[in-house]
Length: 274
Image (cartoon, rainbow, N blue to C red; front, side):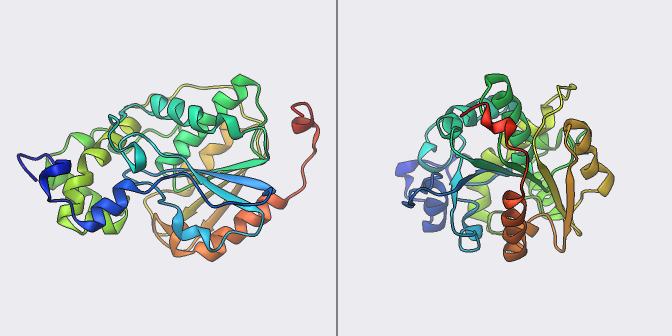
């Protein structure tokens, strides 16, 4: 790192950082008419393909597609976004061509907020809603952020804060070179979440499951507050583990995805789009 900045031609990037940075977020695996697409929206500080650990546990007929924000994956040269609404608009451009096929949405942590904003864009555009929405490791949007200005902390204090509550993948926080590289991205994501302002919106008529880990910094009350955003009755699931329980309990988590996506629901809502 030179003067706090990494350069492509500086020869200082480790192989680990290169791999985390340049992997394409879009699923290139060929499938034959998958029944449902699972569109995954990233957590703060996530690189491309951050949901890869779930792939081997997904049921047949469910194809994963991972949205990639600017500044990571094959979009690493694009400026970072620091506004959650801008992030949702960017993801909207990526996924809107896919929304005429059956699809589910999974948003983890920051991705939960982005999935919520994306669903409102989908509704406003009159496109088919997801067959199911999964919101994991994220309090309801009406819950004020506990520390909205933590993105302004000095470098070391910011790093210690992240290590303390486990909100960032350990492989990023625990390696000094990796963290130094990803720190601007993480700060941008935290700024986007911390500065986003909630205002009541029309309730979404979407089947939704809210999930969280027993050991993460998220209360049941904060999770259940999601119900006020939906007209349908939300489901609430608790898993053993911390903030990244979706990977710690990948098999059980993906079994839950399969069960919820397979649940029958009146078809009239999707029929009108076909």
